[in-house]
Image (cartoon, rainbow, N blue to C red):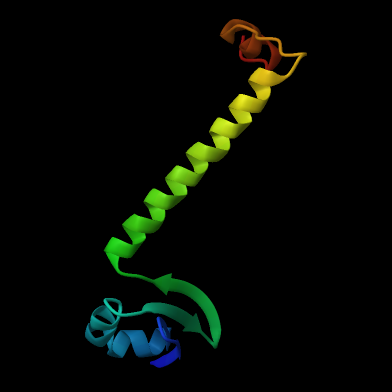
Length: 93
């Protein structure tokens, strides 16, 4: 395992097979980039960090979608259609 930044280590798939217990300890301190034939194929992170990232992405998505909705409401040419009309337009009815 090679530490490339203070918070990131790199490990090959073959090394992961032989040192899984060490990697599990390592993810408490570092992100681990998993490589195969010297090319990155994935990242192993602590579950708590994964949860934090997912929560942050959810918040960003909510902000972006809220902004889109706000812009649509402020358009002068806004026109609402019913669900039935939308389904007909896309061929569902």
